[in-house]
Length: 183
Image 1 (cartoon, rainbow, N blue to C red):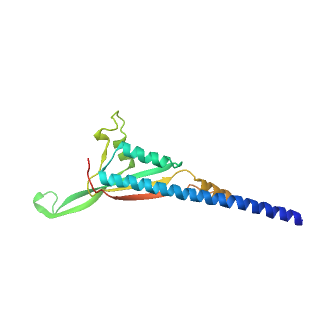
Image 2 (image 1 turned 30 degrees about the vertical axis):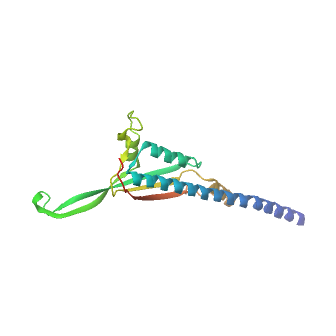
Image 3 (image 1 turned 135 degrees about the vertical axis):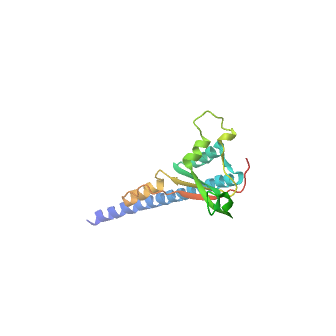
């Protein structure tokens, strides 16, 4: 019995000496991918904020850089367009203008933005009508999260003999105010 317990202990030690370093390397790999995703999203959003538009080329380049990480991502875009509404004491009478405006934001989201960038018609990619234009003082936000399971998630589930589900391991949310209208 003593030999059997030594063999089991040796086997467990061998597995731990192999699995734990492998798991740590996959966690580091995910951290490096998170850094690349952070840089890519920041670059894209800052370019949009500076230029005041999204072109099909900009969006495709952004997706290409994300794809180079080897993961599949869910990308959501949110454009909040600033609107002004004049305040009247009687909305039917223009003479009752109160010399003030209500400010609110109108939301435009991924699906609507994609219809402008990639329309059903055969318009060349460099055509100005395929640029999604934003106005000064609007807000743009981009959220990216992985859809697939990363290697560290797979290793964690293997070691813990479980299933962590579809919890995103790589997530980035970044946005800001549009600073320029360069179109």
